[in-house]
Image (cartoon, rainbow, N blue to C red; front, top):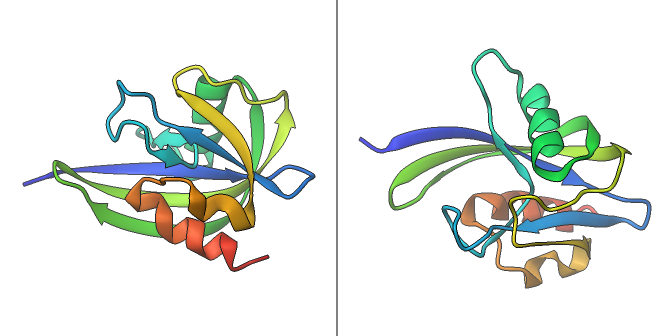
Length: 131
């Protein structure tokens, strides 16, 4: 049976209506694919708490977590991911990539030009339609 992983992703939007996107490093699982930043939910955490902690750890900034956007389960070759994505706003600091290869702020209508990890695509499509 494949390992199941429950993760959260933040759709962080700035005042220019751009979305923060992070490119996974070559050393990571799913290398060089773009994603909404986030990570695994630890025991005893709510998805919102996990998201705030992961963004603090991986990008040295703090966010406030808003409404849920999407809840997707995607079966990869070696594992199954359940990804819950939430809208978020930066509260303190600017995101700095610690583990990721690259980050950028992207307009909604340009999101589809990035090579997103498959589990992120339903959320990408949903927020593109929100224009």
